[in-house]
Image (tube, rainbow, N blue to C red):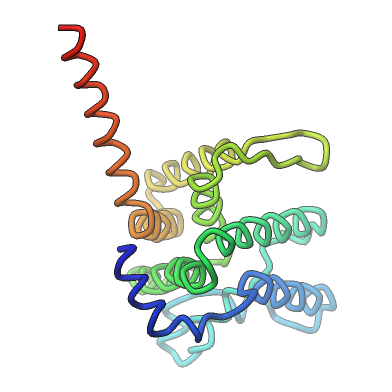
Amino acid sequence: MHEFLDKLERKFGSHAIQHLTLIIIVGQVIIYLFAQSGNFDISRIILNSNAIKQGEWWRSFSFIFFPTTGGNIIFALFYWYMFWFFGKGLEEKWGLFKSNIFLLCGYFFLVALSFLDPAGVYFAWHIMPMITIAFAIIYPEFELNLYGVLPVKSKWFGILSALFIATNLFSGHSEGIFPSVATILCIIMFFGEDLLHNIKTRQRRAKFKRDMKQ
């Protein structure tokens, strides 16, 4: 997968979108302000494949800008900050092109899977666990000061996100299952080779230790 992405980057790297996570956040802030004014029907941008089939094609990308806030501005600010921070971390590790592909793959898989559930509705926040897990894999020991006072290593955010995904997989509801499947597909695409290599390396080390004891 890494070699394939390197080839794509050589051909299309110049078309990478700069500050993609920031663009998404700004879009969500604008929609949030419109919704708070009461002059905008926010349900018109939620991802729903049945509505897309009926001609509301904009839902296939407008849901990216749906603000996952529940009307709570404190939660909204925290969510936007974490989304920006994790997204920036991925950009610094992978570069613009690969981080763009990772993020857009998550949205693409979610849109594609939503067509298996015409009645289901999906939101941009379904992508957040994917970014959190990716950041935790790359920077497992990085400490974030939660609310400015509580230091928490990023691997714990990744573990919580993985548990959240596992719970959704067995929820029995497509609105929980499909976003989790989209996340898993993206993680496998970008980290599958490395994770498999690490597993094989540990197995070889364990075998070597057993052989040495014998």
